[in-house]
Length: 246
Ligand code: NAP
Image (cartoon, rainbow, N blue to C red; front, side, top):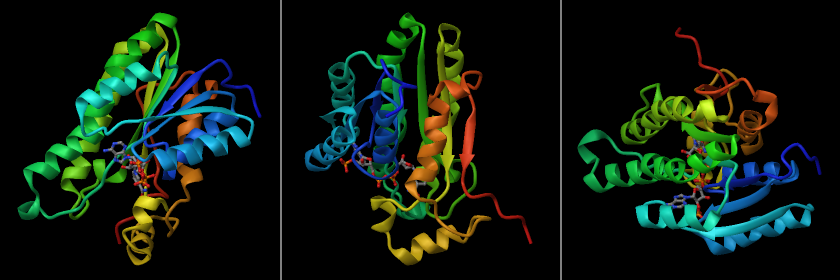
């Protein structure tokens, strides 16, 4: 156990699986109390158990981020938060004629509005205490057109824009706000899409493979840690590199 983040409490949304789970484990190993969020209580209990078994501190809060009232309840139940990782996200794919209002609204609710409500509820407390770090999880689809991923990419492009707005708004009070633009990563969500799709996505990167969750979590942890104390309002790419045109 390290003590780099001891005395801090970190809320990780979507901490029950994939990248978020790995981030929660890493932050707890650095001494933060991890507030693990998700919907699935069984998954949540498993992550809390893993953190405690490694000597860390953790608790679980369930909330469906598609419901704004549940998001505000999550913020209230979490209490005083020093580190916020807006990691939870949904990605459903459809061409434009097949895109429904429900699909658009749900992506915007979970991927954009929920982070906005959490920042609105929690960043003022960080600012009043003079310190805080927020990291938003984005995707290459936010800036590179990806087939079938228009709504997903748009919801994350808005999140990237808001990253800069929040950095400006809370930075003078010591709160840093950054984003990680992830490439394809091997998580329960993407494994469900199929190994062939994951491998095809991996081939769109210079490194020619999908990331392990730890490789994305590393970028998140860096942006939270005091090692990035002069970095705010940025988007750090962890995407395996962008292939040159040929
Ligand atoms: P994942 O394996 O699909 O897991 C999703 C996580 O988000 C789970 O913890 C899930 O919690 C939670 N979640 C989903 N919908 C939710 C909702 N409505 N309310 C509350 N929690 C919800 O996730 P991942 O692949 O690690 O992705 C994590 C983040 O990275 C997302 O923002 C995603 O857009 C971004 N990203 C992922 C990739 C990739 O290739 N994996 C690439 C670029 C960006 P429960 O299961 O407990 O409900």
